[in-house]
View: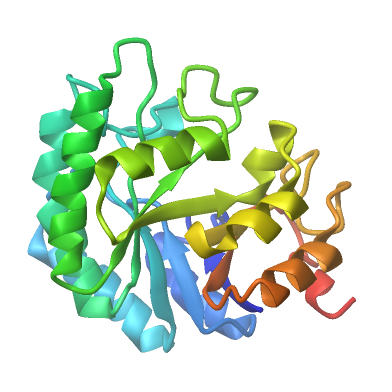
Length: 254
């Protein structure tokens, strides 16, 4: 397996621009990020600073969220929200440009919390994002979240995500299989890998319960990794778990 570190949830004791180097110091050559700015159209200087931090660390950006609103305040995307659609559209070019400059192959578009989400709006915005991403050879992914932590998020299963992806009808739109969220919702993640791995555009992991590192909960991660390999998954696996103190990555040697 190829692993990358999500710098929006790990190394958060460091300023953002120091986290790529921390990932490299811990033996990783790839990272991913939620949208790291408080605006959909950050200044050229802020974009250049982030790009330089990633390049100087010698790591590759392999996943990037489109602007998803105020994640810290509980917002989970803008795709389907009439009050967020213009903001999402305004941020497409900046996200695609940054991804293109850094060779990032995956862009994640979160649906948005209800009530009031509009499916047709989500489809139109996903098509717009996918068409822009196609220009740099990137894939746009759709993620299902668990309703225990995200009670207002409408896409909470692989099936619901697949239905939306099919409706969008773009070759470069795929599923972000966040196995923690799916397991939390009671899905059989091993069966999902066996049946639908070809639809995965990216994989993210944490253990359930607790959203800690693999081995901290009850999910069968050795078998999960074996099934992903057997199914032919060749992308990165994003480490999107919470951990404080030393030992965040010791499971890789266990």
